Image 1 (cartoon, rainbow, N blue to C red):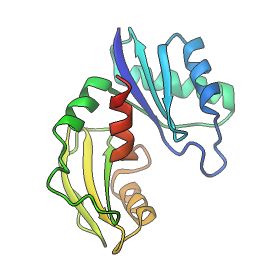
Image 2 (cartoon, one colour; image 1 turned 180 degrees about the vertical axis):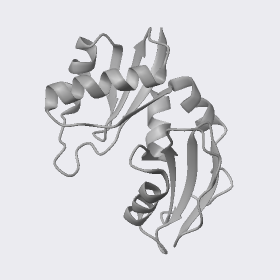
Image 3 (cartoon, helix red, strand yellow; image 1 turned 90 degrees about the vertical axis):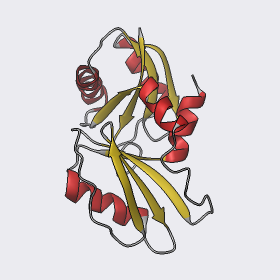
Image 4 (cartoon, rainbow, N blue to C red; image 1 turned 180 degrees about the horizontal axis):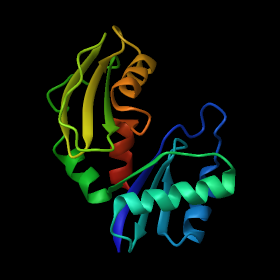
Length: 172
């Protein structure tokens, strides 16, 4: 069994409401084990014998559509990959004051291109299908960042605050 984390895009905003307890029960019913949700923003840690991340994502998307009646884009990564990124923190040289927010965008493909700069955002790098971004909230808004990322990468990406990833790795 391998441990994974599923990141659901756009959950509990814009009318797509899923109670995390219900989501965990649904995924257990679908055959996933040791299911735990993290925060209410669609982060789920679980174990599975299925080896392919895209296959797992497709299963989760299908059961959510069936149970809740709306589509949700799901990105799956091995928890070990998330742990390694957190341990090697690409943000270690950046300020941790309240104005600086760190984000990780999970990309569908292993794109290497770092986007152009936008107000308040510093795009650091793309590694392992993840884009690392620092946002200075005194100069830019997270909503502008997310809109820009949708334009560049499409709606098949999802973004998480660095603190969320740290919380996820603390469960292991």
